[in-house]
Length: 312
Image 1 (cartoon, rainbow, N blue to C red):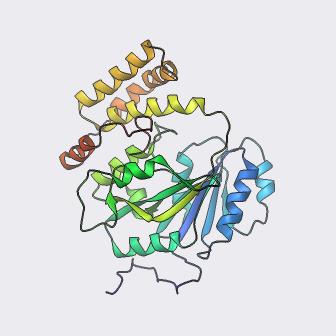
Image 2 (cartoon, rainbow, N blue to C red):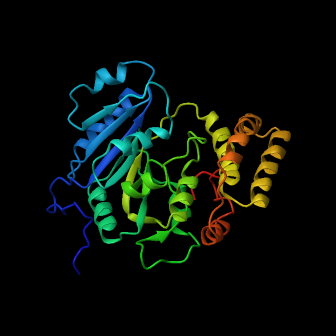
Image 3 (cartoon, helix red, strand yellow):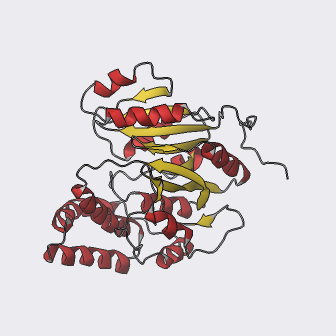
């Protein structure tokens, strides 16, 4: 069967550099880890263009990257942009597809080419979620099983399994789709921000699919991640207030308030930060169309082993 091509792109010869895809890497004050990621990306057979968004506080990263063969562009927004750094990278990309890595993650050989092939063949596909392998032992991230067991029905227009969530450092987007929905939402900043993007893509008619034949490696550091729990809790509630019906939004807010009253880890901080952002969430509120809300309800039970709101 002939492959449907995206206008303006040419499928490269097998095994050579692939001009269809850019890798966007966000980093902040983790130079050694970033260099490992860039060295690995430079060795990929696809030889992707790499855009680095440096959220660092000084010039250390810029100096270390000077002349690195993998980096086609270094962007320095002048502050910590969180997940919004990915929006900046996508705006500067000049390829139809953009893969995301963090400074502690990278793609396995051949995965980027296969992702571009799938996006070529499926014009309604907006985002591909990959299988994530963690650490030197390449252990399965628990989210892989959650995505593989998605209860959403198969879609003939999409490869893999339809989902409404993914891991931010292990996905590939169609640039057109990402920009049309505005990318990551500025109110969330970082922490469980993926679900809202998946909602917005689906609401705009784009498909989101998990495809385990694509894989990314993730080597998270052993540093303190205590603040992440509060961010994920906060953003779970804000996502509900931004896109879900009032009963769902109120239930999410009540659940956080009860968790704070019980002094659960991160809940009090999450509640304070949620309350500060709620007026802006109400102003920007836009509920999902019925078919996407129906899909979201199928996925409302928290994933086993994963904080509520982090990936779906």
